[in-house]
Length: 134
Image (cartoon, rainbow, N blue to C red; front, side):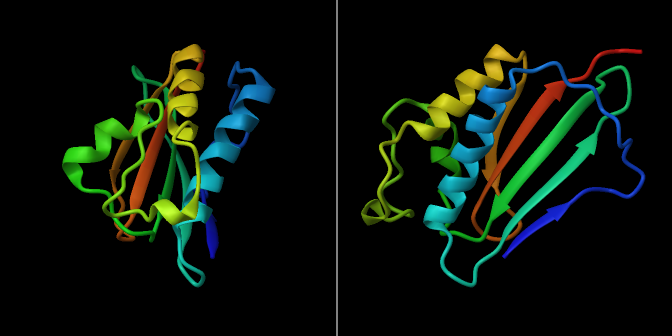
């Protein structure tokens, strides 16, 4: 199940200056990763929030119910060719490049990406994009 979840009071017209092709690649990498490791019948949740000034960021969270990644390994997930072998099954495939590519795309957009333990039991990814100040 994929559940998009955006607050009802979220401003519908957010202006994010970004490379559309690279953002598409970013979201496809993240979704494919979650789909690869989440068992059939599991859950993937996507939610969005904005932070108030002075930060003025758009935060996008992607959380899944796949097997958890140990907390001490979360920062390593963004290294090229890194694959968490103990909690996520290597038989699921993948080259270990998706999250490294996601990190480089976020850096190119002056954004940040971080991994955390998802409340659904698996992996959570937070993307934070700076929004223009009005």
